[in-house]
Amino acid sequence: MKLKIYKSYILKSYLFYLSILSLIFFMLICFLNILEEIVFLEKYNISISYPVLLTFLNSPSILFEIFPFIFLISSRMFFINLYEKEELNLLKAMGIDNLSLINLITLITFGFGIFITIFFYTFSSNLKHNYLSIKNKFTNDNKYLAAINDNGLWIKDEFEDNIYIINADEFKNNKIKKITINQLDKNFNLKSIIISDEADIEKNEWKLKKVEIYFDDGKKETFDKLIINTNFNREKLNNIFSNLTSLNIIQLINLSDDYKKLGLSSIEINSHLYKLFLFPIFISIMACIGSIIMLSFNYKKSKFFNLSVGIIFSVIIYYINYFFNLLGITEKTSVILSISAPLIVLILFCSLFLVKVNDK
Image (cartoon, rainbow, N blue to C red; front, side, top):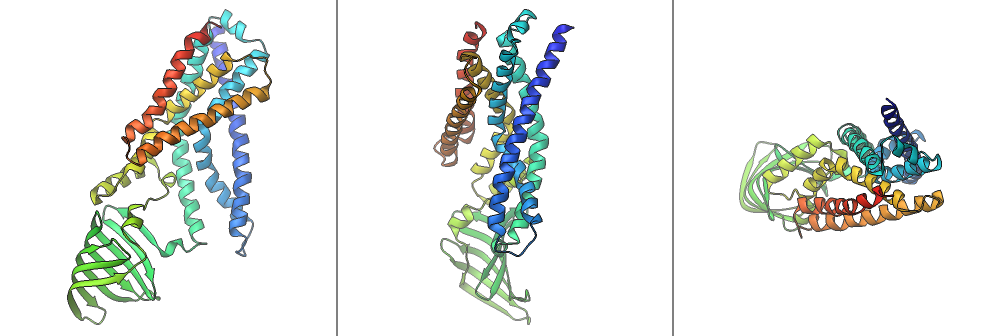
């Protein structure tokens, strides 16, 4: 009975530090973000409510990115509290040794990780989508748009006095195929419909082949070749990615499938998906590392020292992740290996120190 009570106490205590640190970091993110939004919107004569709204919509997605480090620091603060209250020896007397305690914290974190991935990430990605939609209204980003869905590649482009709405069924190498181009004037009146079998888009001057043009007065013209000027080329289209943090897991999976159908690289999307799938494991390892570091160092060190050590390890882990992620995106190694390799390194680190920590 007492054992259950202490396990409940451990859960509540760990949750307390996790909540406090999450709130502190969220407030810090909001403070920095609202300053950025005020600077961005200062040239527009709008209410202060807009920066506040944009901050609220954007901050949760930033918080999600730093959750692993919040869990690492939370586990350290939890053990500092146990030591200061001299409860570690009491827990050992109850049959909860250091290893059991770390396993319990890791298991609790894994459960939180599943919840965060399924629910919090979906919530934050929806807010991020609304954030981008509102912010685009204050920029010219909506003049040049590109997207991919089940109906192929879609482009909205404005060049000189023309607005182009372009649809293509295929996009491979430097060519798009089965193209329909709706040419509009500045008032969005249809001027013509251009249909082409294929276009070379290596440069901004698109070279269309086997072209049929249907004008608004009913006339039709055909050309073997035709050149139109756009703001898009192969390189720009190859780098078209929606802000991935604004898409939930289902949308990411569908987007990856659409990219594959068009012959586009889906490496960055798959990399983001694998990170999400492995997120519960990653934050569990971070909490485990935080616990191991705390139990390995002298407890009598100041809280500032212990917090500093946690931050240093967080930075090191961040750059390890960044390095392997870069290898995956640049196709120097497989995406799965680039995501799993840092986890394997961290798991080996935990395994090496767990036995030693249990003897303390």
